Image (tube, rainbow, N blue to C red; front, side, top):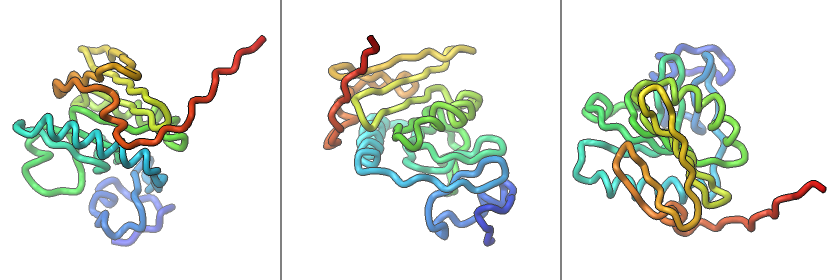
Length: 194
């Protein structure tokens, strides 16, 4: 199936496209394919470090870690940086999308942060299987978690020298492990108004 990027297409049509035939990664929003921005080395290293930490922790569990895989939520398909699912329907057969993740992680970059905190955030918190949403900054050591507790979402922020707790999968790890080999830009001083 061939579709121009600006043509309307159904979500089923989008999912039926062979992902490997795309010239880049696409998400599906409001009936259209949306091209994804390319990532930096920091972005890629943080995704790799995160996947290694989580997959090592989950080695003897029925759960699986998926980097940059399509997530199908109702009539939207997004590509989170990392997802964890323990649902057998997501793992039992080879497919091109995940439907029941419990943990979703986005690595924030200047080009994606607004969307990761905006439209994507709304999709994630309205997906009933997602129990934890994590934002990892690529420009400073900062990990933010939102964990579902009944009808509420509990926010926690972690920075240098602290242990990040991913409650959904029972993982506690020093924050610096997410940033292994990442070269951070110098911090800009906070501007004060007089």
